[in-house]
Image (cartoon, rainbow, N blue to C red; front, side):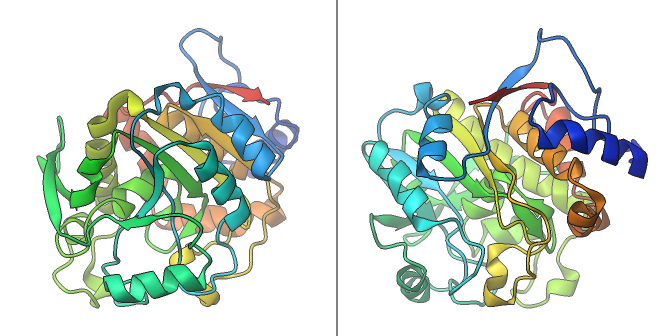
Length: 326
């Protein structure tokens, strides 16, 4: 995004967002007030608990039918900021015919092989229901409609086994994306390690991180990858961002993740991917300077806001939203 973000604007916005009364994008990333016409609803609660999660999910779940994939980020061993397992378990129990889903990693950590990944799942407490490692048996190509950078994307083969997807995301910073929300969760988390992740990262080698794609081109690759998954499920995909323990680092950093400085904010949910991502960024940017500084620096230094502007260009949702507190 090209709009400048001033300290004064952020501080003024903070009073509105912390009180959860904002409607539409905040001044830092959009107009302060818009009419209700043409906005996408984003449901919000400050209750970060099983009850709060189930409440916001009930507002968006109409299209979730059949076999359901719950896409989460299971994290490296003993990561301190991973979503509470009791919350995820409560949601999974609520959704019939559901499984948690993941894919193996491109980097050579403790989720690089399926065997190591399954050990890590046990360590991190993801053993209360089936967990499908979607690229365990290979990958398939699905189309990227109207893509400018890709015409197709390689995803875990088991993705095709599901009718719907609930994208349940720990919203936080990210070393390459700037931030990791629902878009990043599916863009990287649904593609297979040997092909799809290398496509998105433009990676020739698993360990040569310095030569992986960075900045706006990487953000655009992620967006197009996410578009393939969101288009595949159509009205059967919904998005939930949990804004708690928001380190500047992803859960893939494991025990090395930086301690969060921002307060826990709440849970946001929508059927509109861009709207829930925009609302999440607005909540972060509305926090006081001492809490938001590190996250904002991480986001902007990686050109992370390009995620939002490119999703809008790719017609992947609405950046004007109505925040509905529930």
